[in-house]
Image 1: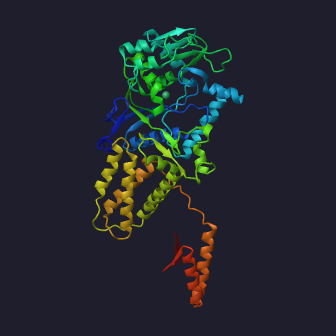
Image 2: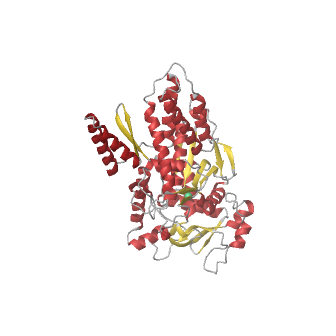
Image 3: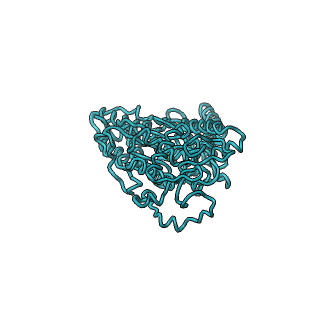
Amino acid sequence: MELYKENQLKIYNSLTKSKELFKPLKDGYVGMYVCGPTVYSNAHLGNLRTFMFFDVAFRYFLHLGYKVRYVRNITDVGHLENDADEGEDRIAKKARLEQIEPMEVVQKYTVDFHNVLSQYNFLPPSIEPTATGHIVEQIEMIKIILDKGFAYEVNGSVYFDVLEYNKTNHYGILSGRNIEDSINNTRDLDGQSDKKNPQDFALWKKAEDKHIMRWPSPWSDGFPGWHIECSVMSTKYLGEQFDIHGGGIDLKFPHHECEIAQCKTWSGKDPVNYWIHTNMLLLNGQKMAKSTGNFILPGEILTGKNTILSKAFSASVVRFFNMQANYRSVLDFSSKALEASEKGYIKLMDAIKNLDQITPSKSSSIDVPSWRKKCYDAMNDDFNTPVLISHLFESVKCINQLKEGKEQISPDDLSVLKTTINAFVYDVLGLLNDVKEEEPSKADGAIELLIKLRKEARDQKNWALSDQIRDELAALGVQLKDGRDGTTYTTN
Ligand SMILES: [Zn+2]
């Protein structure tokens, strides 16, 4: 029996602001759309957090036995500098500044994005469609919205009529905004714009003469607005209605609000059953910004070549750190926090290694089935990875006690323990055993040398010298411990 049949997954739906039992539209199948990157610059650490959470959600659905179609798009046109349809297209601007083709910008940063994701052990989505690959479909959707009277054309551009939509729908249903508030808070358009109202958003923009990225349409040579691509690509691959739509919290408004409005006018249906939004990532307690230097790229964490962190960290430590926080909480990224995660992660990996050294007994003194259930319960509670990790640490304690012979485990329970740990650590959380053993420092080498000299002194029964080495090392904070397999040391 598939695991999903015995696991009641609950998802926090941003639309209803409550945890709801997850019921897919089609039994055994999950359709999930996540807004991907705008490929005009290197992959951002905040984006990494968002995509990492959805990678773990994707992995958990797969683990439960669902057939998942996971669609994550690439925005390669139409995302303007300013969300209110102002400014230059981000990709066209970069192309102008670097004096290269827009598609070279797209290629360069798509490759970078894929590299970073593979460094961090992401599973590829089922489909990764691009906005420029779906211009025809976007034009078709705009035509229908126009026909239904929820959009208007001005000077070759087409805008969505938010006030018209709001007469029969609630524009702001997802973000909790009220159209009246936004009317009062938005400045006048100073006659600069073709829009009837400042709340309206572009479905199609007429390209100015110099604009390179342009396609023919019934209205003008131009390019699509940013929001329409996601409505088109999500419904094309997942249907007019689908299970899950995700993204970073900053996309809730206006992007996702606009997606709902477009789809509702186009098909007459609410497109998404469960909206999931991931919270922000801070760096050292502050917003990340290139301008202030409070900024780090995902690749720079792995090499250690940066001015923010004390050392390099492995991809799995970064993953582990991310998963120790709930995706709906703000997460503060810092060297200290990563160091703490690294310690915990190493403990977990050591315990997994020790699992192979455990000899089973006839019966168990520990309750493995109820521990296993607690792990699933944690993930079933809106993908609560920090609680899952606390249960994994419980098993670390158990494994160490089993190894020392303080607890017993039956062969069946041992097999369940191994399968469950491997499933959650590797398949669901997507961790790898990738922490490099630290290279011994020069001080370690010098201590080893003194231990060797002390052994020679002892072999020659030169107790005075051997005691002197031991005592003077102790005075420096290095404690020697003589055991059956030789002398080890600890430092304080
Ligand atoms: Zn989107």
